[in-house]
Amino acid sequence: MLRQMARSGTPLTIGEAAQALGVSADTLRRWDRDGRLRTVRDARNHRLVPRAEVERLSARPRRHRTGTPLSARNRFPGVIRSVEVDGVMALVEIEAGPFLVTAAVTRDSVEEMGLAPGMHATARVKATSVMIEDGGGR
Picture 1 (spheres, rainbow, N blue to C red):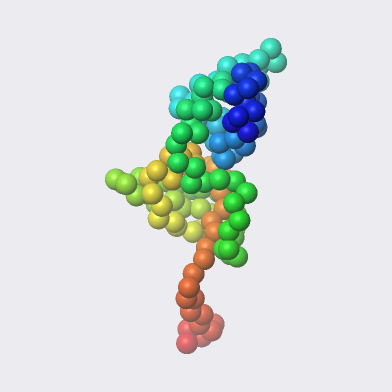
Picture 2 (picture 1 turned 135 degrees about the horizontal axis):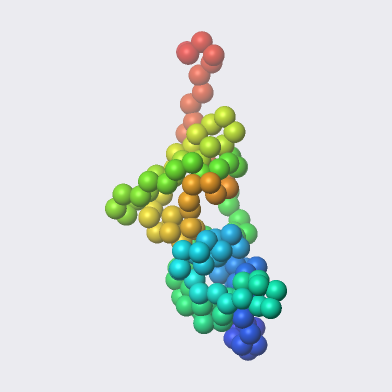
């Protein structure tokens, strides 16, 4: 994708840039609002991402590619309620239906994914051991 883009020299749409970078279009819009991404506007006032910006961002590690196959079976879609960053780690709380899932992740992950309260996200859980007790607490 980047080679095709380099040949054309024209800016990419938000969707094209998101696909090339392996992030969501919402993440790119948020980065634009936060000043982490420079965009230009077309005649219809749609955001376009200059080739140089995509190249700059593609030089960063791509840990969060969309469409990467995962073996986790337990998925809990929800809304991020809080993000608490402390040093190199962060706690992200996702309200998934009646449940509140808290994930300890790296600060880099929070920044690269643009995680913020109010965003839709999915907690994917994979455990090597799960204990279940009956309703009587035994």
